[in-house]
Every structure is written in structure tokens, then in C-alpha cells.
Length: 377
Image 1: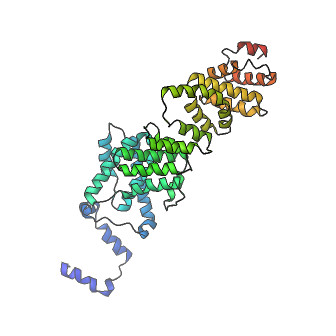
Image 2: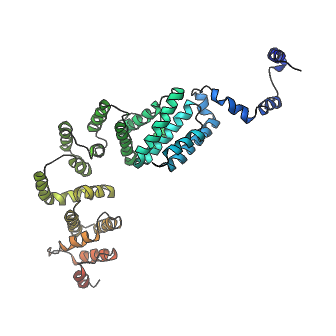
Image 3: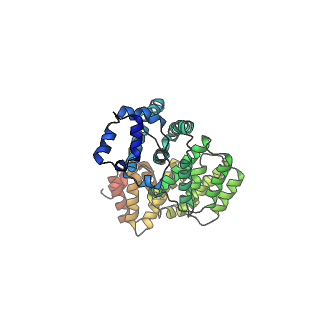
């Protein structure tokens, strides 16, 4: 019978230097699942290496981690947070720092996609990072790297070796990353100095001025920020950006009344400009500058007046269809806008009939009965 000493002595035998595959497999089969599981708790986390990253098995493990994390996050709610944390620790096997970073990447992407659940996702995230910090002293700096890299990629010309972020470059994801930063501020991931730095960078960049609005909206801005925004407004900027930034500037009730009266003097030129933008910009303009019913009516009145004067009537007919089908404006706004244009005696009968046919097809007939009868529609 082979004793321990004889077994250890085998390592010095040249004929034992290379083992046949069948012998190796026999050794592996001799270790059953329970034995492996028993000693799993004594592992030492493996550090990330380039060789590991190239290993297809590691890539498969990463995919499994990502899928499992997403399945859990899809079920997350205020009522089951603790249960799903338990499920995470039981089912998601994070053994290496590379696995841990894959979890961080997965939850960051989820936050980018669904900012309505940021508070809940951060509650889940904080419990997990605190646990791994206590057990293994692992940091979550990769999360900071992702947020910062995304921010710098959006607002500067810097490039980073994080390829997947290129898939999230649209305006929606820029705004969502800002919302993630806001949530991190509210949950004290950042201090006040960092907030000041973010605001300075946003106010000095000129790539996406509308994002300044999304950062400062629903907050009380100080005189310094107000002055910086006013300086931006002095430049030639897109109408959409201008409208958004103007809505950040506070004004008293009397001043608002004056602005309201002046609005109708300049609204035609503003609408003419905004009509050259895409539908999202037009919708943003209406939401911000025409929030009241009489303002929406005025918008329709001016739009119809521009339609009458234009040689490209099809463009405005198509726009009216989109504004109604998307419910950006209502049927009553257009019927009132058309009625307000009746005093113009130079209206082309052909254009008026074409417009009425379009409005009738959209279900807009209230208050227009006499006009429809006039044109036998």
C-alpha cells in the first residue's frame, strides 16, 4: 500500500513528470462536488490578468454573471429588496475581482437604461459593495471610472478604452448619466467640491447646451450660475437650447406678465425657427414655451398662418398630422387656431380646403362646420 512518504517521493521520478490524459482525468474524477464545495470558502481571489480576459471560459462566466444580475434587477422593488439580495448572494458566484467588475458594469448599464429606478438600484448596489468591501476589501472604483469616463466622453474630446460606452452615446444616455451623478450626490458618494466641478464643466462646454438645463432644472440656481447662463444666452445658439436655458432664469411675477405679453410679438419668428428643427425639438419648445391652452392655440394660429404663406404646404400638413397623432397638441388647439386666421381675406381657397380635409381626416370638425360646408367637405 502506498503511504504518504512514498506518494510524495513520486514527484522526483522522471517517469512521473508527464501524466497521461486518462490518469489526469482519473484524478479529477476522484474529487467529487462536495469536496470542492467544502474548501471553496478558503479560496484566495485571483487577480485580473490579460490571459484571463482572453480565456473564452471567463467570457462565458461574465455573461452568466451579467444575465443573472439582470434577472434579479428586473424583479427588484421596494417590497422584495431583501429577498433579492439574498438571491444574489446565493446564485451569483463572484470569485474574482474581474467577476466583481462585471457585476458593476452590469448594474451601471441598467442604471443608464432605467433612471426611474435609480434610488432602488443604488440601495441594492450599496448593500453589495459594502458586503464585498467587508469580506475581501474590494473597492468599487470601477463604478466611478465608468461614470467619469462617460461624462468626459460626452462633453470633451477625451477617449477611453471602454468600448461598450460607445453604444450609449445618444442624448438620452447623456442625460441619464447626469441623473446617475445626481443620485450619487444625493446619496453622498460625492462631496460638494465635486458638484462644483461638474457644474463648471457643464457651463463651460458648448457641445450640448441643453444638458445644462437638465442638470439645473428643479433646483434653485445662485447668482453666479445665473450670470453664466445669461452669458451663454448672449451667443448665437440653437432655438431649442435658448428656450431651455431661458427657463432656468428665475423672474418675479410682474416680469413674467411682461414676458407673457411680449411672447406673442416674437412667437411667429420663434416658431418659424423651431419648425426647421426635428419633432423632438418642436415638442420641447411647445412643452416649455406653450404650456397654457391659449399659448397652444396661438402656436397653431401661427403655424397655420405660416402654412398659408408657404410654397411648401406638404411640409406643414405632415407636421400637423404628427402633432395631433403624437398628442403634442390637441384638436381644439387647431380648430381655434384656424378660426383665429379667418380674418385674413387673402387666404388661398385651395390651401384652406386642403387644410380642412386634413383636419377632418384627423377628426377635427368642432367649430369648423360652416367652413366644411363652404368647401363641400
